[in-house]
Amino acid sequence: MLWPRLLWSVAAPSRRTPPGRVPLSCPRCPVPGRPRPAAILLLLSAAAGGGGLVVWSRLRAQDGITEGGIPAGGVTEVLAHRSDNLRDKFVEIPCSEDYDSHKRFEGCTPRKCGRGVTDAVITREELIFPSFFCFLFQASILDLHSGALSMGKHFVNLYRYFGDKIQDIFTEEDFALYRDVRQRIQQRIAQVFGISSSAMYLTKPTFFSRMNSTEAKTTHDEYWHPHVDKVTYGSFDYTSLLYLSDYSEDFGGGRFLFMDADSNKTVEPRAGRVSFFTSGSENLHRVEKVQWGTRFAITISFTCDPEYGIGDPLLG
Image (cartoon, rainbow, N blue to C red; front, top):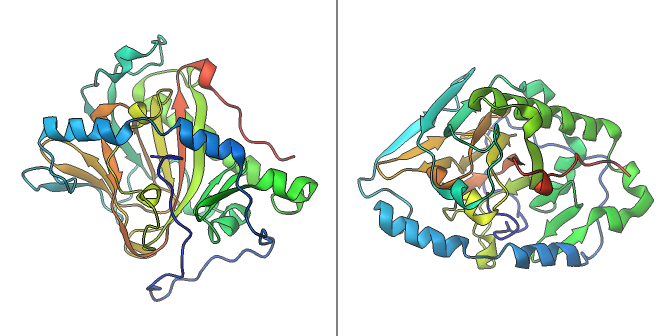
């Protein structure tokens, strides 16, 4: 995922509310006043603004993929339908050379590369993040580690903004659930790729996101551009996404696309579904534009380099 390089705009009310869907409510969530730019996040945004899209242009020319992100043959295959209930689905693919330009960590740095989808790590009933969702109804990205909340063209640091009152907004249970989910995803990735989960480290950015059909205000709002995580963030070795809403029920468009030379491989989001993959150029990807409704997800990424590891977020 591209963040904070590519930012999603503040979401306007959905153009379409599918019948039978009940919006989430957020009784504990106060509305921050005028957002104050968070200097640390602006610095991160500038630091992350390297040549990700320039690299993509070069890859596109080499691999025969058109300007719209569609392979020259125009073929799209569905890797995971929303209606599927997948215990484990994994496709192994050759590793790119991206990992050769970084320090290797035996027993962790990818030698087996690929992409997987599972609906067996987390149940739909466990996906209750009321406090976190609350802020995403007002903005589009929430990073629990830094407290960064994107609001239009600005950032506000929730922890700094609310100070001690942050404990009236988030609870220990919220953070405990996040940690438990992160651990389960980490263990599944380690199992599939044949590495030790203890050799993997959570890395930043890790964030909740909201996407809808609001028109992009700036180029930074354009989340749909193809990219490679390892190119954008050198520390990334394994990327995962946990989907919190359902394709075709909660939103239209917004599918996740792996972009191979011969075809696109799509993942249709389903609440509780985890998509995971090695972060190199072997998994060039993008997200389709959301056409209606709202798409929620969590991006959780891992590194093999302890220097770039971060701890789980803590309350207070």
